[in-house]
Image 1 (tube, rainbow over the protein chains, first blue to last red):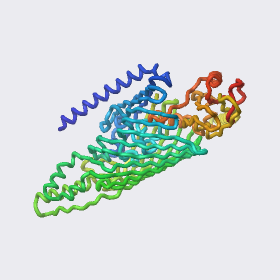
Image 2: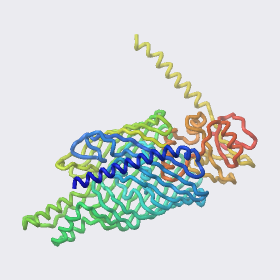
Image 3: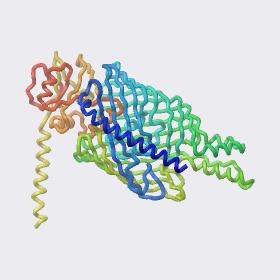
Length: 412
Length: 147
């Protein structure tokens, strides 16, 4: 098993290295192409080098542990946009990610149709636009933080989809308004607070309304799916055991096979020397083990010339998962074992209660490069997963820790 | 002794900062366009939406507009950022990274200097740009906004 795991890891490392080299060669050979801004091929890209350290040995957070690591969030990507004619263009984004939990490869691949300048249709593999920065989560240069508030940004239901979207942009007096709607499917591995699952969604859909008035922005977004089917490999045998012992109602409770939806309200104000912003998100689900999650962040920052200092407070609360256990204890050894299985399942699914305060600085030392440093004080709830990945044997961990990160962000 | 020695240096620094801030504020840019016909006046938010949101149609003008900017670091661009866009350069750059890599919008075309700006605007119908106030303009170019 370990040999197999190591083998897969080595293969992934090789794949990533090859991809990185390919990206590098492509970026060198395409410098000329980049000069032509409008016709034919335009190549651009982005990269980030992120180092981080978590000050506890009892848990991991975003993959970080108490040793300096550069391989959780570092990445490089290249984007090619090909203008076919005045109405059609094609875009592809190839990404190499340093983390074992993220696939490297084609991140975006779509065709764009613009019948006029206020209307745009995209079709293909797209990233889901939900939170303010969720479709550019890999482009660290686009936002102030190193790690956007995890209670929201790591909890969005689906990061990408295959399908279509439509955008319409218009002006009413001094208001500019964007409407966006999308529809598609999703088949991929999903990782929610350390629990990974194979997810299959035939239909997902959502919409966004964004109103801008001067420097003030209001965003409303929603995403929904009537039926999410997910298989969590690590619990399948346990569920089979429950079913064969006649506790199928209990087994059903741990099945992921129902609908979920999520809503978002965001607001921000930007000025020449400061900004404030907030996003509030609520996930509601008919799936017992994917219970309601409420999260919100408030952020603010001040610019001292090219240096931005910012602070963000984030909080999330998740409704508790039922701790019912109908399997009697003390009847037989087999039933005792099943009883403990249900206890284990009850505590297997995440409960994302976490408050955090992030203090950070961003220095744009060149127009396309920024250096960032960030400290996140994390305060979760004992007994809940609180977005931590608890290392076995440390269940008593108090769920409070500090994450230190620094990053170099680059766009070209 | 050494501490006293610092005071004049700090004073000079503060005065330099104040003076430079003042001279910066004294400079202005005007928004210029090649749209022919009658004189037209656009609001600040119309100009901002043209440069930042790609809203190229306005009721006042028949042709579609297209924005032309100066490169980052150019004095006229800094003044335009402050007086029309209302955002610092670093925020504008991160905004364009977001728009570009999410397939939404591309930043305006950029020219290198004022003479290139005048040249491009005067030869392209619908082109909108900005130059320092007082720049001599050819007859086909008009001022459509003075922040």
